[in-house]
Length: 173
Image 1: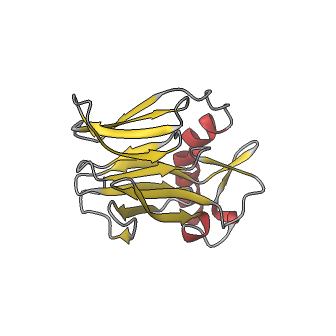
Image 2: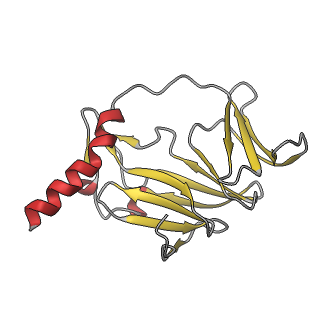
């Protein structure tokens, strides 16, 4: 039984390993929209800023400093999460003190989640050829939770506004 479970976990992780060691593309202007498409954020590496507005409007509702390649915007347009700059990969010498999720509410940083809050030790991370895969961020679900699939097979949900771990919504997405 344990062998079967281990094989399932390995097969679920193959997509991570397949894309794991590809170089990231160079910084480029990125647009990310909320699941409903009502709000969008533009992250610009030249201006080094990320701006949020209602779709179809030029009026900026709020901004955060910096360019970010892994962005997740909630459907209410108030909450925004920046994922680790290396996306689903962290370096082999990573420590559990490494920040991997940054929760913003109306442009203000409200919580930073460190790797050690998700894993008790690095042995639970999925080793690739040159990195560790730590998570696959699914995005915001219908009840405004950020859903994160961890490398150890667990799924975690965070509240959009405060970044606190919550019980996953019953629909599981």
